[in-house]
Image (cartoon, rainbow, N blue to C red; front, side, top):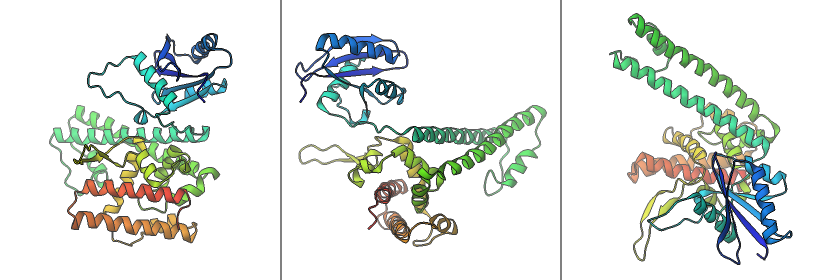
Length: 372
């Protein structure tokens, strides 16, 4: 089964590649080589290995998911080279406390994981999904920039003794108050520059959100986005992000596997009769985990069983089975949150994390047609 199969571990960085070969028969890595960041160097290295192992050798290359994204994978597969991107959180880890970390050792660990199948491969998105994912993440970067400029404006006002007396910040009244503050010439100029950046980012986010609505209306996304929008807290942006980040939901055999992929399952440190439960693992897709955690916070307010006009509008056009499944989930999750907080005296964060994990399981059921 493994005869003449050569596993090539690649420790990739933005400045260099470190390559090595590994075989089941030898059970150790060999032919280490450090190259420039160029897929052609990898192809040249494989040609060298053919002179060592023979022309009929089968090569399986692999590298950890990281800064290079899917670029190297696509370049190698276009040249008919079998390549795998390994999820770092699923790989074999060295347990020695005095660990020595070098590029050679990392390349060998990758090669050994490939040979022993001790890893989970990263899902490779389609070209359309990858483009959409990059667009959504770009929008999130602008959202973070807007949050930062808001904090800077409030901090500037606080430093100079100006505190808004209204109920909420960033309302029309608050913005009017900022523009009418009596400041000296230099401070007025500083605040005006801050406000100009705020206005620019606000307008840009409105434009980007409008574009995201257009993307979500494409045939490949429209139906699935409408389904996911039936859940409380999930609108177009979160629904579309979930679709392009996950790709194929059927690759998860069970809802628990999907929750584990998002790092929402509890860790454990048990030995013998001693059992210690830890917090969630936070492994896997951090970006999607944060989005769905934010969505789950909407279950922390509102009446059990109540459906807002906005939710009814998002649910319209879906089949009765889909709506009934989402309503069942919405009622259960809101009821569970109040029970955990009010009866079991759990902290809000613990309850929201539990709700997020269960919401993820309902999403998996929705997207794999397990709604009976």
